[in-house]
Amino acid sequence: MEKVGKLHRIAGPIVIAYGFKGKMFDIVKVGHEKLMGEIIQIHGERKVIQVYEDTSGLKPKDPVINTGEPLKVDLGPGLLTSIYDGIQRPLPVLLSKMGNFITRGAEAPGLDQDKKWKFTSLVKKGDTVKAGQIVGTVQETETIEHRIMIPPGKSGKVASAKSGSYTVSDTVCTLDDGTKIGLMQSWPVRRPRPINSKLIPAMPLITGQRIFDALFPLAKGGVAAIPGPFGAGKTVSQQQLAKWSDADIIVYVGCGERGNEMTDVLTEFPELTDPKTGKPLMNRTVLIANTSNMPVAAREASIYTGVTIAEYFRDMGYSVALMADSTSRWAEAMREISSRLEEMPGEEGYPAYLSTRLASFYERAGRVIPLGAEQEGSVTLIGAVSPPGGDFSEPVTQGTLRVTKVFWALDAKLAQRRHFPSINWLKSYSLYHPTLREWFRKNVAEDWEICVSEMMSILQQEEKLLEIVQLVGSDGLPEKEQILLQVARMIREVLLQQNAFHEIDTYSKLDKTYLIMKTVLLYKEKAHAALASGKLMDDILNIKSKDNFSEVKFTEDYQGFIKKINKAIEEELK
Image (cartoon, rainbow, N blue to C red; front, side, top):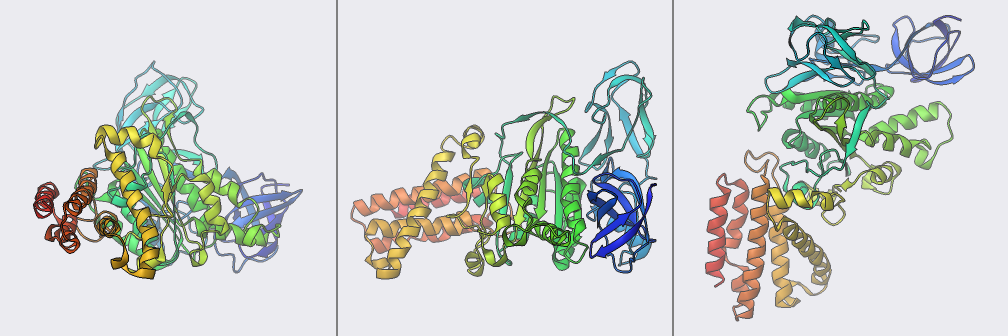
């Protein structure tokens, strides 16, 4: 038996072939058009293959060629600013070759093979190097320096290393055992890249979104889930996180998204400006586009391709944020392939190994010390989930919740009321509060945690009072409770609501978020004092400064504005 076999049976993206040697997860070329596929089951001589492209037109006895290699991605200069499909084919290159429609069997290398990069060597002849050590740098974009590393499993003494201009396939460093180090390395996507050690996630990923930063913070190297029904604002929330989070590198995976949503991302991102540098945001972004009409097998590959690229930049010492939008479509692809394989279905038809696959993906997040490096790097994973009908009890949401520590629950009712981001503050939670407490105390304010606890307490009390209000009306409540409802309304309208499309309100500094919370608590304190001194309830609830407070969201000089508002609140409630 050789490397070439023959097709026996075709069932959608799953084909069965005989007559060639192969091992699990080998990449094969199927049919005369050489469609890319992957061996996912072996029964003696029978190989079951999932094909990453449309299989229409294939017929029994068509040839199958085994490459003998697993699915790998090319890692090196040129990743940033790129737009790939799920198996790392650069879409702009395919567009220039074949127009708007990708022909089957199309191939293109993940990195430009002809472009020359200016390499600066950091090692010299005779130096001892180990796996993961940085041997030189390439200025990949205006803002990001690409660090060339010794691949895992390689080490020794440097025989030669020279600065100069090289393509990604050229050798830039040679070890004494003959190992050649180039600007590019390949890595199998299903295997996590090795690390030295994992660290406790004790630093927040600052997103500039008030509800995330204050009430439900995410740590760098942490994992978060954004489940929500259609139209609740998942994609906009994911895009806001990609635009504004303080990660060094962004990897955005559109996994099985609708074509028009993915088009918005692909047209918007190249035009966005990075708030940190004033340069294009694409300078530190990798986009992976895999729309819902693309073959299902490629959806699963796109998630692994994205996380492997994220781990590569993490190994350089960067903090990386990966947005997966949405893991539900990935799970649906798994369900379709599982049913074609005639496996025993689990809950709602999903395969029994759904939870294991979800866990193995999210486990690749973390704040780590990479191989051969002292500086730390991190991969933060943020997965959107699209439960049918907004039912959070379905298997994908539940499987995700088991392994994520932050749950940002989107609410269709809030979206209908035009409250965005439509995060339900009573269903959402973050388990990173204890590890991040010290950071906020040192870097923002001593009483940050106290303010956050107070906000949550008021919102929870409001929920109980609203049930009573539905029965007796707000006038039937005791006066203290009426003030509490007013304070909760201020929190909802000023702290929790944020306009993603307003040039000032789209990003909120931690300092601004903190001052907003302090002003809310000042109003609460002064209103109770005014009530105790005999002021009329109507006068307390209808002060002008409270109504003007919401303008702080759209004010550039928020510190000066908040000082004025605080002074006015004190004057009016004296």
